[in-house]
Length: 142
Image (cartoon, rainbow, N blue to C red; front, side, top):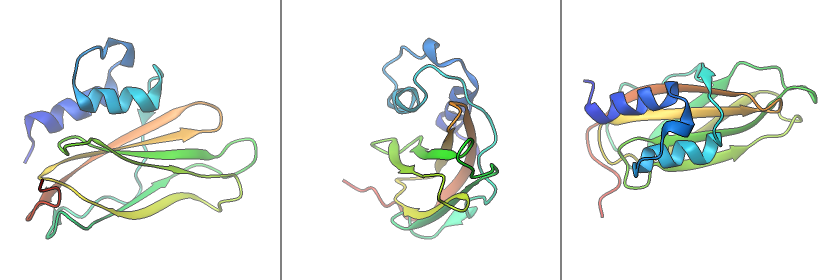
């Protein structure tokens, strides 16, 4: 099920970010990561599960298709949850010594929503992708 905030989150990834001067916390979290740069599409290789039984422990794997060389590698992977009380979930910093641009973690989600992954490469480019997930029991209560 697509929600209005989920669609807004997807649209934010496609917009030029200087236009995001609103008070929206999702836009602010994305702008903090992008610094005015526009990401291209494509960060996930492993999607989220379509339904999370417990919003307190949602498994997430983000794999970025990029060579991990000293000249071009994934520097960071940022996760943003569009409907969480604090949208900016986490940032993973990677080095060229990492064999692949992949991270796996568990996150808390307050409700059904869209997760945005933004990968930052060493050449300054950004790649972004979104995935929708349904949450049976929220994990961000109070």
